[in-house]
Each structure stands twice: as structure tokens, then as C-alpha cells.
Length: 159
Image 1 (cartoon, one colour):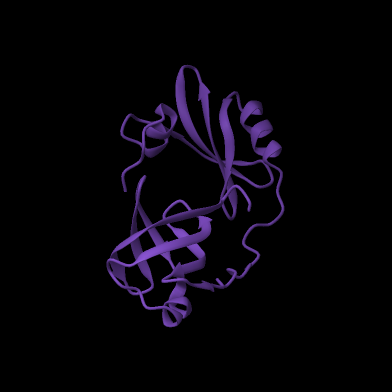
Image 2 (spheres, one colour):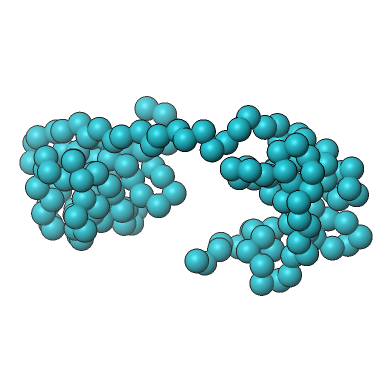
């Protein structure tokens, strides 16, 4: 099992179509069976289940569902690759930031058409938007309420 693959067991406490909440000994977990997977099993509140799957930031993508002694493999469709990300080197973004007098802070974050990286210059922190070819598109001063400022302070972002 890879590091993103986990096993857990618990009791179903809520059901939302093909997603459901499992109460485990360590807390609650939102799990996703896919609409096809939900057609194959009966999700019942109070049922004891054993799950395996890939832990995503928001939910567990269930790949094995076991309940009442029966076990079922669940297939998830791969998301299509629409080619949104052209090959690009994050080192280009770091070098562009340094060439413009910014000290990069952290790793560049890849977007479809550019990189975003936080950088400091003259005691101020900026969020830089750098094109894949190294041209700086935008240098936005980060204020205290800005999402990137919260990221730099290590606090969670509330959406």
C-alpha cells in the first residue's frame, strides 16, 4: 500500500448519495464510493464497515468496501489529462524572482499558465506570478488579510 493508501474501520453515521461519513476511533472521515460504487452496496447508517482507499485532502476515495463479511473492490475513473500543464521548470520562476531582486520564500506553486511564488524585497512580502518562460506577470504586495500571508504564517485558510 502506498503512503496515501489507508485502511480504517468504523460506523457509518451519515449518508449523502455516494459519499458517507464514518465514525472511527480517531474521529470522522468523509468517504467517497463514486455513483457506480454506491449502486453496488447498500449504505446504511449504523453499519460497521472496513475501508481501504486513497486519502485525498477532503475525503477518502474508497477502493475496497467491506461490510457484513462481504468485500467489494471499487474502481474510480481516472481524471482525463487535458494537457493543461505544459512542461515547465520551477527553477525558471525562482531565477526570475531573484533576477528581479526578490528573495524567493518556499517552492513555486504550479498553475496552468504560470507559477506563483512568495518573495521578499526591501522588507516587504509579495506574491509573484511568473509566466512559464520566466517573465514576471504580477508582483502583488501581501497584506495581513491575504491568503498568502496566512500561508506564510502557517495558519489554515478558511474558505
